[in-house]
Amino acid sequence: MADNYLENKYEEYKSRKSSGRAAGSGRKAVAIRKTRRVFVTGGAEGIGKAIVKAFRSAGHRVAFCDRNEAAGKETALQTGTSFFHVDVSDREALENCMQQIFKEWGDIDIVINNAGISCFAPITETCVEDFDRILSVNLRPVFITSRKLALHRQSQESPNLFGRIVNICSTRYLMSEPGSEGYAASKGGIYSLTHALALSLAEWHITVNSISPGWICTGDYEQLRPEDHAQHPSGRVGKPEDIARMCLFICQEENDFMNGENVTIDGGMTKKMIYIE
Image 1 (cartoon, rainbow, N blue to C red):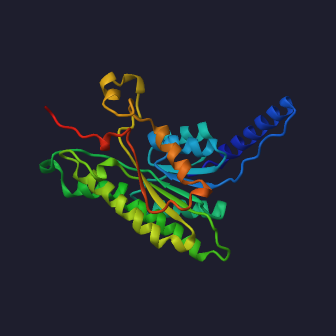
Image 2: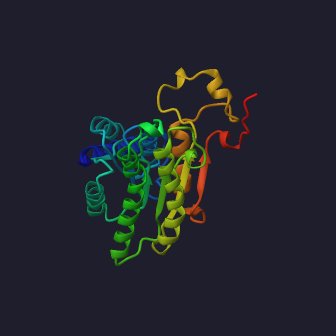
């Protein structure tokens, strides 16, 4: 389900606002350098919502999917973006979502694979179905969206010389705590899948990179304790906007030499040697 009406109205509002500023100042409004077509999975809340807002604020055309219909509609209304009600573990639904975007936009320039769930429990209380469920939401959709974009690019008569895929990984791809087997496996898979995709998608001018967030607070930041911030070398817990800014950086046209890499954004925690005395 997409709400293009909201997107169109938001475009009209932005146009009027820019025209008004230009008329008031006696200067011409500055045009956006290039408008990219962006698709974000899991964009209704948290880090995903920050990514949607960041790309929309930068002037790009943005569509996102999420299984939370109420939050998705609200984010679409706030940002003037297109929302698709999709559970990414449903391969057919995710592929149909992208196909509809291809039909409406012609192509997708940027895919941000952000959707993910976590379910921490002792291994003796974790069933195989729980493990499979985490992989079906966190890992498999990264392959599905990347493959779908590659197939679309392959079918085009005129090549698109720009493409970016950014996969949201986690510092848990290299560090763990008890009861996190499914989540760790899914993020480790994303880490490895990223560099494999970077090689496979090169012929369609698509770079593929991943971002590994550390502790990112998606709730009430004011409820964090001083010691929560103090343990980070950077002096604070992360925010969703920290990840969104890196997504924007990776997707800049000039940054095509960054490919197959993973960027850790965790306030320095994975570089900190920790022993209990």
